[in-house]
Amino acid sequence: MTYCNALDMIERYGTEELAQLTNQGVNHDDTAIDTQTLDRAIDDACATIDGYIGGRYRLPLPTLPRILTRFACDLARYYLYDDVLDEAHQAHKRHQEAISYLKSVSKGLVQLGFDDNHTKADTNNSATITSSGSVFARDQSKGFI
Image 1 (cartoon, rainbow, N blue to C red):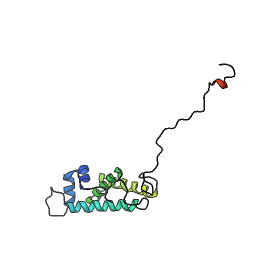
Image 2: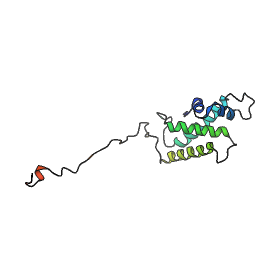
Image 3: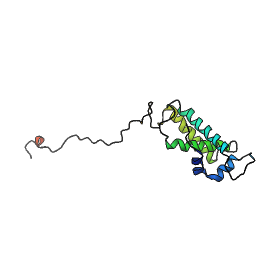
């Protein structure tokens, strides 16, 4: 399943950064995005997500949770950086956050909002008010009212 696309990546990180990342070691125009490299990183990110959530949910998912789009973009960006990141870089931190979240989903600690049959999980988002009864009722007043 595809969780993000090139447009999602451009909206999040900009054309300039993606052009620099996709043209490393390639003799192309440095101002244009190498779509093959970008698509490969996106495919790798989507495969990573499928690997984590495929054991918990039947794929493809019926709808795409927005958080998976964000994490797919973060993973693809991390893969584009390849070996030039240190642990203090923002892309590395986002990668760690995405992997941590996906591990939680695979363990069942975090839900994506679907059950095994691809239907939205039932939620009880309504308020219920109960009363212990009336304090001052005519039948309980014992002649006072």
